[in-house]
Image 1 (cartoon, rainbow, N blue to C red):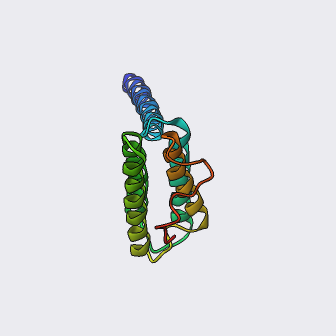
Image 2 (cartoon, helix red, strand yellow):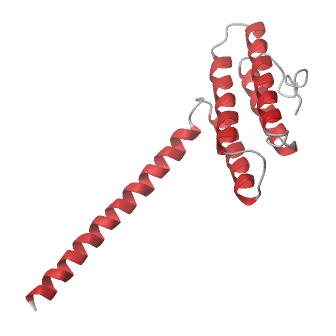
Image 3 (spheres, rainbow, N blue to C red):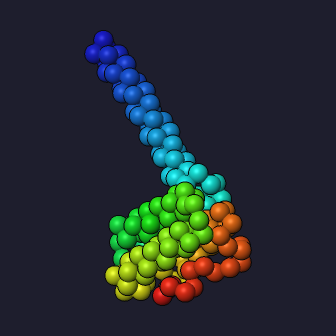
Length: 153
């Protein structure tokens, strides 16, 4: 009887520990999602980047495209890096050089992925992110496609 009581108490303690671990993991995951959304410091752009990543990952998991998670991560990192850097530029010329470099890098990545990483929806989202960041610096109008000159996607 005493052994049974000890066993029940041990099970309760293990369950409590398990619940604590689950709660910790949920909080950690929530924190990482929020942190990932705050990479550039501009909420609207961070949301666009997060949505783009979510859409690309959803497609990756539902289909069998010729790209992998690392390609998505590189695309997202390239865009986040662009936004941070363009916000730090001092002139429109400097900003436009950064736009060109970013678009060319995305062209190369898309080519590596057999031109399937950046499809119509992604193209619109990526262009919107690049345009919005340039607009934040007053380098372009909100409806001016500053990617078109170099874009192959």
